Image (cartoon, rainbow, N blue to C red):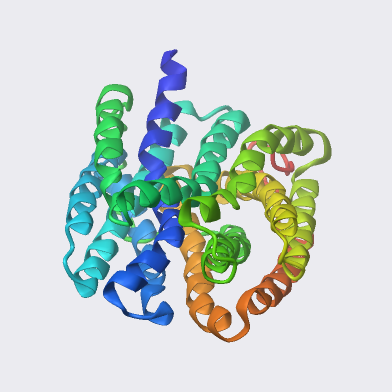
Length: 394
């Protein structure tokens, strides 16, 4: 592997804990509920609490990366993931498991903003941004890991029980830490006095808001499909996890198409197409019953994932100030958890009362708002002080 390829690879290895652990828990909820006898509404707090913590933590971690050095923060996050993996696997009570899960959120939220700050500092092009294909590759893997989480979790649970989804973080963190120490460069930080949390551009906040709504839909599907399959269709955990596999596969296959579409038709086309696919997948959820229809719905959502993840992640670098990349990525990551927390919190209420239909109608309503946002969201760079003018995203 070349030196240029090692840096993104190390960032990917360290950053996949966040999406992997945020979705892998989906197939473990039924088993945890059965062992601790806490009920669906209570057990979903294992997911919701993780996400609510994640709303506040990423901007703070991004700020620490911008101030103390992103490599230090990145490695500290990996150590935290290894420690919490052991503690969660050994947790004897449900309250202790929730507490460790919240601590796990701190570790998983540190690596992404710190890693992207390193990428921005080491690989920025003439326009001040990393190459679009580098952004696409990183987030293609991260999106795929989020979608693959229930699949991996399902197989781990079928072999060793729900505690295995926490313990697997230990060897993964060890590998990622070795890669980080060998391949990530030290980045010089700005030592001047600056605000603790810089005031972000309104266009960046709009991008984050769009990403939050997109994730309400995605995480609703991540949670409701495996839960419905296990509780209503009597499907075992490892098969239930496979039902969301098309999300991972299509996120990998279609991200290069998103890059090509952005280059030819502009970022607006990417955002509108992703929103239309999101709405189509949500509408298909209303007809879920036969497994074939479940696969159609998640396939449409997987297509939407490829386009929306690349498009919105690229816009972060369009609207973020270079020296505050860590906190900008942290805000963006927090917006993922706003959507995920909303989805997991609604799940305990909607699924209990209305089953799959309640979640489907929520997904449809949010997807319609995302479509409107895709038509209105700013996709232009700020005017260059040397007269470069506005240009659309990659």
